[in-house]
Amino acid sequence: MTELTERQKTLLLLIIRDHIESAQPIGSKRLADHYHLKLSSATIRNEMAALTEMGYLRQPHTSAGRVPTEAGYRYFVSQMMDQAVLPEAVQRTISHQFYQSGSDVGQWMTLAASILAHQSQGVSVVTAPHAEQVRFRHLELISTQGRQILMVLVFAGGEVNQQILTLAEPVSQERLSQTAARLNGLLAGLAVDDISSLPARFDSLDQDILTLVIQDMRRSASRASGEIYTDGLTNVLTEPEFTETEEARRALKIFGEPSTLKDLLDRTSTSGDVGRLQVLIGGEGVWEELRQCSMVVARYGVPGLATGTLGVLGPMRMSYARAIPAVRYVAGLLSDMVNDAISSG
Image 1 (cartoon, rainbow, N blue to C red):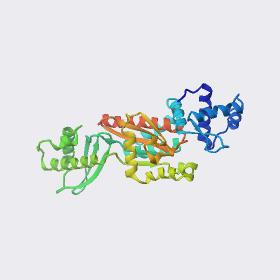
Image 2: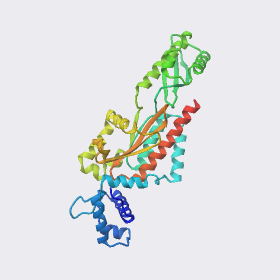
Image 3: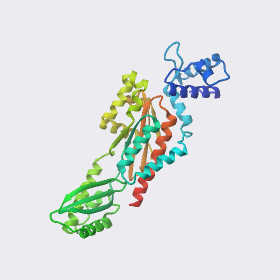
Image 4: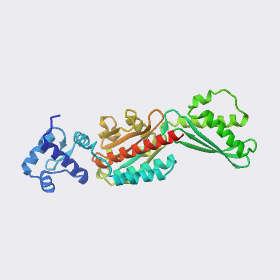
């Protein structure tokens, strides 16, 4: 596209900011009056006509003002991508909330979805961190009642599985603790295939527990992208884009279809490095279901060990200045927490 003059850049950014707030076409008189521009309405109209010809704006109706095109939004995002940050007070509040949640991954996910929805005023989506290769971290065996015991199995990445087991005969807590200690020393950091190929040199209790550990790890490996958490659907239901057009409403339906949503997240995040944001405007000509929407997504976690995806969806005129720093900050925070969980194991 033609290089923009400084005046055209300023007007384009003002039009987009105003349209994001008002959801209305923006005219030259409003720009001149609202922003106290030292330009005549005629000059502003000429510049808006030039921006329209260059593909950054469009005119919905003959007598109406202008609204941004996908190219206009992309230019807007490129200008503010590195500048948008969450205020330090907000960062401290979010960080405190996460570290209060302890080591419960499910609480991390619920909290991340809630924070992203609140900060962006869009619909949030977060997938739990999933081990790219399931690895053993820690085992606890706790006597509960009679022949029943509680097995707590922790994987690298922080995923925790618990189940009640019924043994053939009662076993003391001392023996259970000894078995857990032996297996923890032997299995630490191993992938499920490595554990399965270990030579059979265990007593009957050790072997029974080892078999259950392997089964649990294989079940975890079969869950391809982790559980999906969403929040904030009510944030966008009243936006004009979602009340007036069926195309935009179709985008929201994917949040009720886990398999479709999972496929979308897989396709949008596979090309992204951990921590790098992607802003998908109008589906980028690839995702038809997002043609009237925008989505800000990022991967988080530890590459090669455990990663997940998070993001927010909204109308194309979503508040990028809110969504981008929120997604970036929460992704970084979750990456640190997943890394700490793996390191402490």
